[in-house]
Length: 301
Image (cartoon, rainbow, N blue to C red; front, side, top):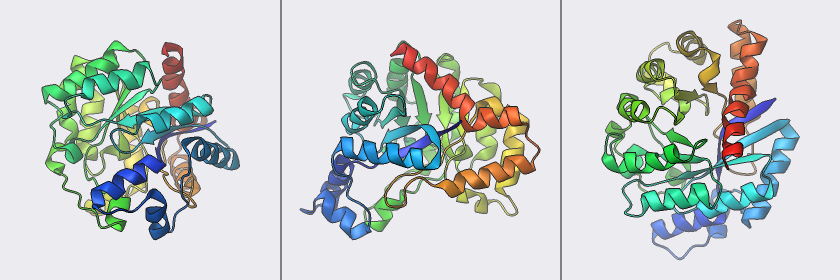
């Protein structure tokens, strides 16, 4: 069973938001045409496109992330359409005055199961009490995960469209998650991309906090920041420190026609097999951990 813990749902509303940020009068279709991508169409048609893509690659289930604040309803529509295939996550700006209420609505009314926090993007430290107020929502609704982006942050679609990305990467420090993870021990926290350049720190906080998980998504090109570091070595260290039970396979797939990134699965399969990871542990990493985590979430919903 293959399950993907990290895909982005680039909805029509997502592109409309980018068009507004550009300050022009362009539509979602204008932006996708400029990018050479497929127009997403309705939320339901994009959900169907994703379901067909999963079928084509033999993927059982995936997380779909609403990739701008305020786009919760798009992913919720996708989950309603294919509830056995998709788990809905949404980006939340904890600095927004209505953040806790928005998070509560998304979790209780829209049946979404992951709150995504990007500290560098929204200029908020993980030890800020506004973040804690949003995490309290997850704690109050068992089965809700909190995804926290750490390390280097670069949003490819923004670069392609010439949009500024005024991020503060000093705020993407995995060690800053320690207080939240210990304060809310029942909440599963997910750090994507092995910490995106801060592997040592991500492993440290996950080692001392059993409710912290790492996802393996993307090309993990951040390895170039450490001379000689390979993805094989990253997997070896992660398995040694955490075991297989807290690693979640992901691709970071996002747009069509590129679709689901099969090459990432093939490379990561090759790596773990080459490391001699047992078949049982491989099954956990590539689907079992996802199934265990999100089965509980479905029951909670």
